[in-house]
Image (cartoon, rainbow over all chains, first blue to last red; front, side, top):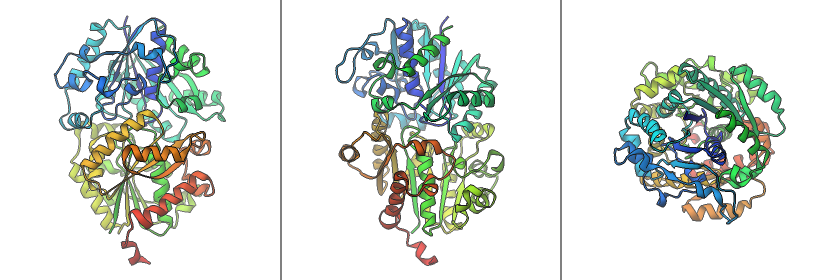
Length: 259
Length: 269
């Protein structure tokens, strides 16, 4: 059974793209065929983590939405990018595969989608065709923060939704909005991921508080990490730090998602 | 001449709302008349920094965009907040107004579904400036390229682009500057935020300025103190001697003395 998993947050900068890339990589390490689609058309970014440069992007999600190609033409197999660092250090290459469907980083192309809009039905078809044509075990959807059409669509078709938040008032308030929407859209499984938590907080308290407020399972509380900041999206964290405590927690979440 | 200052970033979580709230408050504390509009309709958050609770926001930017109210009715003077909130008493003497976006799911969804006339938003900005005799209008934005971004960029005197020292931000900033230059913003400045202590800030600033051919007006350290405060209150007022706060004060000074001088203010003093 293929799964569609959306990663979302109300405010920006919670770590959605990093979390999506991390989970996708961990699943690929476990041998799965994973698709990652960047639906953050307004401000794409996950391609940076996977080391896919603009000049190497043959087709993007934008091209598909304008009818220029099939969805599978936009899929870039970036599995081998996970096997090395910028400095040339060799890492473990996953047994599975990661296919990235990027959104265009070209100003003109972002502006065009803004101006013209696109057929949301086409995006929906794209999700399903990807799973089928690439024989994916999992499709992970990275989203733009806040409520927008792509978010609503991806949540409504997902088997599982991960809502990422930081322990901050704006995020607490906004997560309430997102949880409400997700419940209305009947997502089968929903998890909270509290991210970038200052280390002086009591994580057990943070988890308990969030579970009480939202009546939703907190899959993990992840600390702010100096190593993650220093990596600065120059690569996928779990590939570079396979035994880090954060990686271990994310690995547990990845496995839980496939149960 | 009143000044319109928009605060942007390509990716989220760079600190736009927090910094906008801090700089605007600092400038108001210097005697100027200031308003902030939260145009982040998709994910509002500015109101949290000023202690607005969901229930107290009956009128918002959304109602104005739907033609239900005048923009002035959605502009909350901070005195009202100061009066009921001891921790925000410092707001009492300030000529500062906040125009929040609605946090109600149904209202966000409605704007998404129906859209709105961008000209209406633009008219609203001008009305605010005239009605409140503003020296400065700050526009807090949603990350990335979106209609509100493009409008605010097109009408701003000064565009501030925020970024963190992160690859996604670096790439995205190139996109944002490209847009700003095409829309001929008179002045573009960068602010580097959340810089880890191990970084050589000077080298980073030099690198960024060379890459984007734009001036860095400030470099703010990553601070666990600031992170702990989060959006609970205006950090630079609560902790004026903190390095982060000093940098904010310095940037606020730069704006009022150099970048976006308002001579309208002089009529009031």
